[in-house]
Length: 403
Image (cartoon, rainbow, N blue to C red):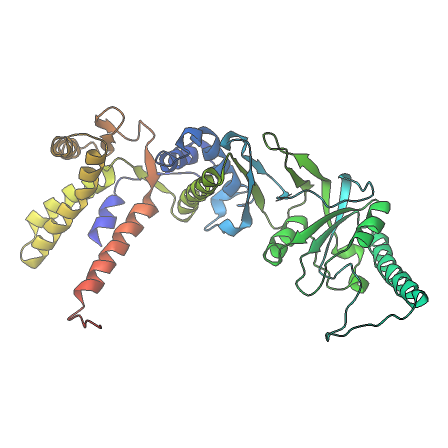
């Protein structure tokens, strides 16, 4: 309990409207990643993506749900082509035939969950057609059935249709795409069930399970919807821009030259967003470079000298354990760990609370002046979790080996 309290003695408060302070904290997080050379782009992007879903007054927020930020990976280009889209992006182009539209202004968007294809029976039955007249009648009825559904979609005022993926039968067929194209409706197919809620919150639409329940009130809106060719790959994506966004969502379009870079960029941006989320929950920054752990270790040693008995030994052992962090940091940086930790301890004893290890220059520096900072919540949570784990292990009386 004392260690987190000691680390709270000298944190710097952070204002959620101070974008530069948030970017400095995120850049510290990204400095150890594979994509660290792109931190000048990814750090502001991660900060803006979280601030965008906090509302007009970020200072009033107490938590943030990162599920409101959708990560869309698209192979091709470089990480520098990554962008934040204040709307919606699908990782495939629109499905169009017979010269259907690829760009729509003032879009009215319908998200349909019914199938634009001929109905099937619930049981596995076979229809035997004995002559051409019967076959022609079946095709004519199928055409009429699909045309009626397309007319109802057009009548509702929708000019963009999102079709949810179906596992029961074909969600659409070439005939339905042909009719919709002739009516000037842009079609995006294969919307995953897991994406439906995000799409509805972003566009302000309501999923429609049956064509008869489709009405203008259930449509979403966007200023512009269209295919965009991504540079570096030639792939197409569908972008929805100028959305009302009543649910406060955003989309990050990640680019990378291969799958490994894409996966690493996705993980790094998510970690950066978690840093901002930690600052939303507890709005304090502490110095990095082992400064916070050294300060807590030094104060615990002083506390060990003031107390007696078992508590004194516990405080001293905990202080020794905290010093492992700056020792390991110096060791990994190729420095002399004993000398560096001794200098670090001396700096903190003289009252320089922000003193930490500058791994780039190989000496002790003020981490606040170097903008090497981290959220207070991250360090205190790690210490609490580690302490609780050790306490749980010490409660184990015996181990039963099961062969």
